[in-house]
Image (cartoon, rainbow, N blue to C red):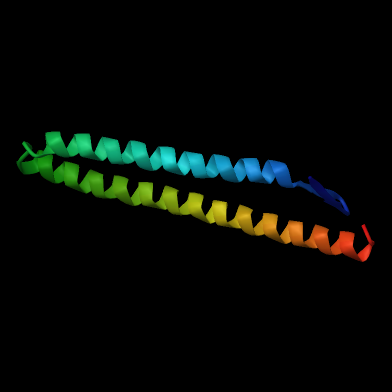
Length: 100
């Protein structure tokens, strides 16, 4: 369903598709990062000294970056859901007022 107004329109079905793709990407990202982290832990256990320290620093940065990406995807997903609800509500209200 498309909601149109002055100079813009919103395709609610497309918004649903985008939201679903965000959710799928977030799940994909989380699963792959968890797998990568588990494999790295196996190797890192044998590292010592500067190599271990350098990896720990890099890993902490990587985890922070991955967390930022996941949180950003969640913000986008929430915003898309809110927008869908708002546009759907506005459409229903307008249709009701027009007796449709």
